Structures are given as C-alpha cells and as structure tokens.
Length: 140
Image (tube, rainbow, N blue to C red; front, side):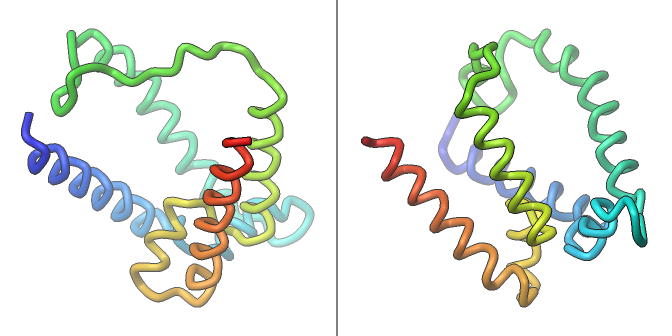
C-alpha cells in the first residue's frame, strides 16, 4: 500500500476522531474537570462517551481481528506485553494527574489547538516537552 493512501487514511481517521470529540463535548476541559468533581458540580457526560467507546470496542475488536491483515497495513500492531509493571503504573498515574489538573489528554488537546483554545496553547507544548523528556530518559 502506498504511503499516500496510508497517510490519507490516518488523516481521515484523526479527523473523524476529532469530530467525535467535538460533537461529544470532550474538547472542553471544564467538561472533563466536571466529571472528576464527584463531590461538586458532577458532569456524567464523559462516562457515557467512555461507555460508548468500550461497548463499540468490545463488539468490533474481535470482528476486526478476524481479518488476516488490517485494511491499511501489512500487519496488526498489538502489544504482546501482558504484565502490569512499574512503568505502566507510573505512566498511568502521570497521565491521570495531568488529565485531572488540565482537563486535557492528547486527543482533545490537539483538537483544542486546532481551534486555538488558550488551554491547549500551553498544554500541547508541555505535552510535547514531556514526550521529549521521556525519550531522553528512556535512552539512558
């Protein structure tokens, strides 16, 4: 498969994902923070979005993996790691802390950057800095 078709498929997939985030309101950090505020002004919208994603994945993941190969790749890229280890727990904790503090995770942050959200304008550079720091520390 040509690189152009793969790139186009990736761009369309990302645009569809971004559209889903925008339609569901998940690009608004206040909506996320409202979900995390269980003792205050709780907003359950994220629970329904996550529930829909989990149900969709449960149904379609098995169907997709019945194919011999993906539509736009030579093979499926599924991790063979099965252990819950320290790096996984630390990464999940850092992700959750960052998400709780900022109300953003990478997908919605990139959508927010596209609409010049003030929060995304500081979050995305910090996210990229964290990714670069990880790369440097991982190389040691």
